[in-house]
Image (spheres, each protein chain N blue to C red):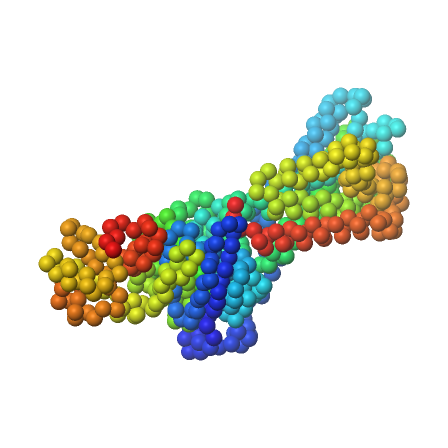
Length: 291
Length: 310
């Protein structure tokens, strides 16, 4: 059974079409990165998956309809929105007590063990913690929940690079065990390139790219083309072209590696580069878009 | 790590439920009420402060009296016709008034603040239903505050009784009279009955405030009060009647006539004889009020289900 199955998700806010026929299938054990510009519908997709908003179309999460069965679903689905959502008046010890009191799958000792590794004291109020500490606390709570699906909506927003790195390290080392599924959104795409197993680009409420990272690595190639071979390279239909230090960088989809290697230096592109190529052009905001 | 899921990734939910660690027993309602009290400490503190202030006032009064025997202000050593219980009743009324204010202010904020500070996103990520959440918030004015008010009243009365004893000892007045003239225990039962009736009677008011609190994006108190005032004014100007205003007034004060005989429980030798629980249970006002409260609370649940941060 797929962990998340969606067909034709549609959501309209007033005159705005937030989701325009989104299809989605996430198998258990995957880590899906949902990447999109602001207002593309990322949070709307996640909110629909969490049962926080109703939407048109078919949606099953762990076999349940999230809008109709949100309460049952929250036992198996953990969720971190951006760190500002933790109530500021709550004490750390109260947070542990409360979650232990309401969550049947929460293991308090595990959360406490994780917190001991941080500088967070149980008596502190959340308002007195730094943003990074709040993220650590939230992660400690979520990692102590034996959830089947973890949804992370911009979990590292506003954190410094050390906390961000630590966040993903903890997530992969202490939490992810290949039976769980994680779906996350972030703007720090470079940092999750080696975290995620699947990638999905969303733009203006539509999925514009969906592939596994193995497919990503074998399909897309970036070519730092030799200036004299630029014309030859262009005939191979790059999907994107940009200039760096006067050299042209061309991005190819499904072109043979050896053929490209003859024209210059090849490398696997960053998610950000592909994102700009695919979403940026459609969005009309790409810089240096050559074609 | 969960070693179980490594070995048996497809272990069905039901089987895991048998493992105590995997499915611990939870009490979402209890913890949601605790949560409310953590966030709104004034709910617990304010009635206690009112009780303390009342007690202090009587203490000052007692010192004042002890210093000037035969002074005209005689609350603790009453002269006829002031009934001996009156100061106790005054203390109780003040504490109850404080409790009503606390309940109203709490309700106006209850479903509004969590949306303003975005914490609703966090609360909704936990397995607590909207019904449990709204009921736990309604339980503050309907359950926690009445019990707290009753407890504070009893403690305040005991303090006053002690003061009374000391003043009587100091002034040489008889203690026998005090014991026979102060039916405190009966008064307490009457007061407990009173605060419970008050909470039930005012339930639709609290539920209305909760509904407004879940509805309003800003100024929840205005959303709660202005429509009612507007209806009263409209009715008065358009039809020159004031049915709605008298309906509101009945909602605020009708409990007294329904739950008690017309004498004040504090002013008769047997306060319990003024209680009319039968008439109360037969009063349509009580049941209509509870039904309206249920409708408002159901509306508040619906609103919370659809609401996010604002």
